[in-house]
Image (cartoon, rainbow, N blue to C red; front, side, top):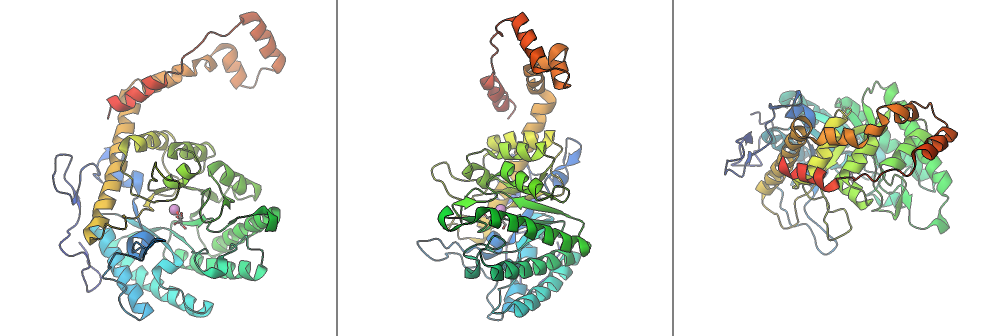
Length: 441
Ligand code: XUL
Ligand code: CO
């Protein structure tokens, strides 16, 4: 294992390896076996697991009722440059020990924002060259970069959708710098999550202008990145609410409309986040399927919400049966286009041991691995596909096949229905499908 900085931050924790289901070592994978082939690909290649810089290195557990609880041994220096290097050292030690290959960041997760744009850019450039060295020494890669255009108070009314052009331009400058950083680090993709792109009250909002400005802004960002040689994919990450009441990219279907309306369909796909799906009153698998149907299933932010409340709790995934329903969509639609599984998840405020960060990511990776194995078994061995095929069998031949081929008119349907009388009742068999999921687990 390569340790790149001088300090070891996660002392006593070695590289996490696969020990199988019977292992009682909490710091071992029970299901995630990176080299194991599933449906013709290694688990490593299916998932491209990534660490999220913001939660793992920056989130100390503060909530509206109290400050952070976690005492991270990195970012201790009062010099922002040195503090950022410490954080990068900890990040790469963590990623390497997890056996992950990827990470994701917002610009100012990497290094603190400065008082001026020029100094902020200088800081980003410094940490980017530091990260470049760490990437080449370790083989770790950047899954995607993004810019935080929502935390700074200047963005309280939005970034690209801000009613004030001064702020829109400032956001443009920030995105340019974040794109430069992503490109310099060979980032494979670039994410736009809406942040404060939405509104609280229609009374003070020109919704049409705000949405059109987002369309213009995304096109500018795409054109700039392409002109700089960026070959990767842009992702929109849908979310229905939080921080604004009405987020413009509410869910997958709404975001696909944004992409198509502004002519971005050749360059943009979706990054689907589990907890964002459930906040939109959808399931994760529904959002994956909507994205896949449009050929836009790009990447995943893995986490989970909480059944008893309605906000973005960003917990680590731990329900393999639910995740298996998502992995059925994942496998049947051919996986992710360009992206990976980024753990956009945080340990709970009272999980204060450094070890907990490892346990959480191990649990998340094992949940996805176990779910993938289950989904694969269902597809390969169970009657699931046959049952599904039979349910739609009336479209395989005769008039049903003519209908699918676009050969029938409404009057043809009229004539057919008149001839054939009342359709016979056909059960949807939902419980049978659910039982198969249980049986093969
Ligand atoms: C917010 C969220 C973000 C995006 C990147 O809910 O998920 O962290 O993933 O900006
Ligand atoms: Co996210």
